[in-house]
Length: 562
Image 1 (tube, rainbow, N blue to C red):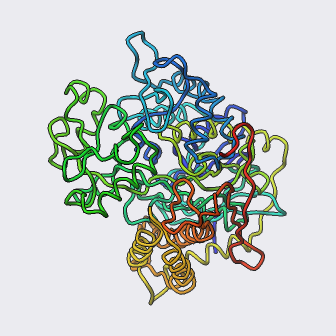
Image 2 (image 1 turned 90 degrees about the vertical axis):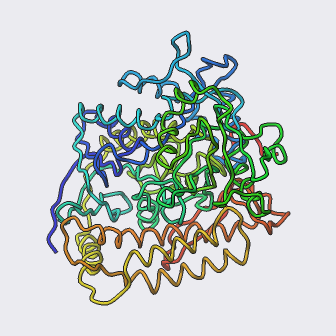
């Protein structure tokens, strides 16, 4: 099997908000930095983030400070966050937002000319800085321009498939050039994983098409410790129609600006669930409230609820929710005059690769940041903390990867392991009989949506675990590609992705099955009252090749669980 080898000091896998920020930071250390992007540079899922980025500036509410941001994040995470990581987040958020401004990002301003801030769910003060409702896009445009001005070498449309480990240390990755079908090995002294989430393992999701869990699966297979993979946030407001837009995000900024939720009877039902905060309750709380209304027969015709902002002045809606006007306008709805129909959609993974305070994973030389990193958000992520996470931990992972690269020489790699990986993906092209990736993905999506969703129970989870083991054993080895060519072949890419999706889905189901009580986004209708859930679940690949799950004590620095 022929392949090319490319060498660098620091390799960043992923080119979203976290990956770009990590690459910029690493390149500031005068090192050879390569960034791999699975899509064209600038098209990452970060650009789809709308509402804003959390930073305790106190520009609108002067009493806000990092200590309050810390408390809100831990309470919002249902007390199972790694509090050391939360401290890093809140203490560095201001500097990272000012970094973005220095790079050219333009945020909305207060009348005094300061960065404007809006309210988001479960936060004590108006903390979320924003650029209309296109904040993620503004940040990505800014970072891409900075990348182009830097010495970072960008390889776009490059699919990393496996992490290479040598003598217990990271050695690089195997990859496929999606454009030409060439096989490559990228060797590096340090690797940063910034591969995003895995919403596409579910039938309905706000995530981009490429968010399939590549990074989670690659890290797990390499022997990394993964944490709290059962904690998945279902954003309460995704579009319900047209079918082609189902699950597309309706930003929390709509509720932050005063949007109200109504059931089919015209009742503002959040007063029955969380009367103190209404629509600005936690995302998991609002999602469960909407689904309860649907289950009890008070949902909209499309199985959701109504979100109305028509009571606000049109000029406010037009200025602050420009994207939402366009998004629903395409569906024939004028949000200035009529309500939107919304329902929960799989949105964010709180779990992921377990890291220390240097953003380093359990494999020396491997770092992680952004959504593929776990531990920071605990049981539920506050809206606005994801973009903050990408910048704070993107910078931290890039800095410490650079330091590691300066202190270590390049390690070798096992050529036989690389050859076996390329043989594995090549076999999908050569297989004459088997199962198409489209059919396999549909089965997986339906299974996860029906059995490992917002409301969970023992019977469904046990069934999901059993079925996922079957799929991994019987379906994954039979995945075939209809058109056996290597040059830009989406069917082949989806076939490779499917194995990653199944591994990620298994981690989600296995950890959800193990957690018998309810905590955060993990809600058991049959919860064990004796399981308060004040622990993390770590999972790693055992010596026997099976998933090894264990409870882990919380990392507590300031706030004790109640």
